Amino acid sequence: MKKIVYFIGIAVCLSFSNCTQSQTPKNKKYPDPEIATSYKNFPIQYTDAQWHQKLTPDQYFILRQRGTERAFSGKYNHFYKKGTYYSAASLQPVFSSDTKFNSGTGWPSFYAPINKDAVKLVLDNSDGMQRWEVVDSKTGSHLGHVFDDGPAPTGKRYCLDSDALIFVPEGGKPPTSAK
Image 1 (tube, rainbow, N blue to C red):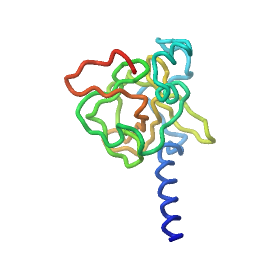
Image 2: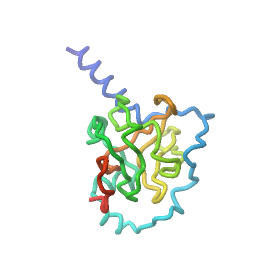
Image 3: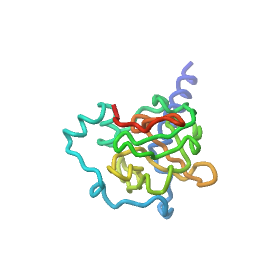
Image 4: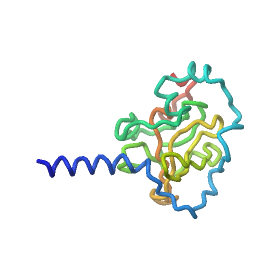
């Protein structure tokens, strides 16, 4: 019995660490999308009070406080309908279902953004590791992280939080509100 509990504990720990540990070699370059040098100077700027009005508490935690949802808890983890994923912060399209894949990490994963201008990368040295944070290019809001262990053709795994995204089915109208 102790061995079973031990192995389950290790499996949960490894699953959670897939999107939190640095898997990006320090010498790896990311020419696409553009690398942002700061969280400031994005085209859309709101006060903290305005962000609280626009977003749900869970969206605010992920997008504005750079939080993360628990592994395997997000609504888009095992979700494979055709359509477009929008940033809940800027309401711009950021990823397509055409590039979504099952990474087994517990978070929705994509091998490329919808276009090179949809997201920017910010060097993230938090939690004692170095990795690339994925932010939406209009607001600088946190969407997740990118790693070098994804499938062809890019080899990238954009590991995102469901609460940072709004899914619109193919042929649907773009969102007008995050709530």
